Image 1: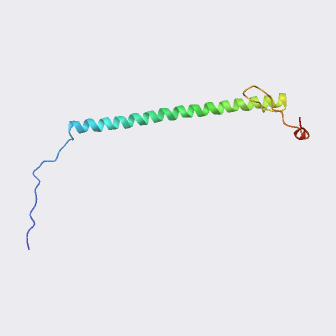
Image 2: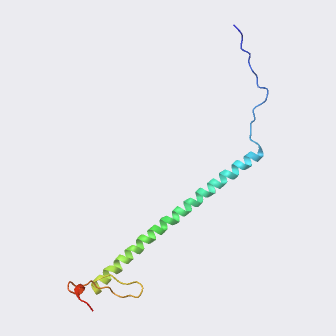
Length: 96
């Protein structure tokens, strides 16, 4: 039976990456962290805006209730303020 020879690697293993590689790693990680921070800021702003919309929708609902009580409808042309009253049963059949 033949003996196996041990292969010895005479080249020592590196303990550190090069300065250029370390610089690249840091730069990439910094960009990732920055992007994640910006996403977090955008999500926080989005959350604030969603709350703002919900509050504004509540205000609109209150105003629509006021218009309904005062005019019998809340159907208003927002361009000129014209109230669009519901057509009465016989009114739709009339011709000018």
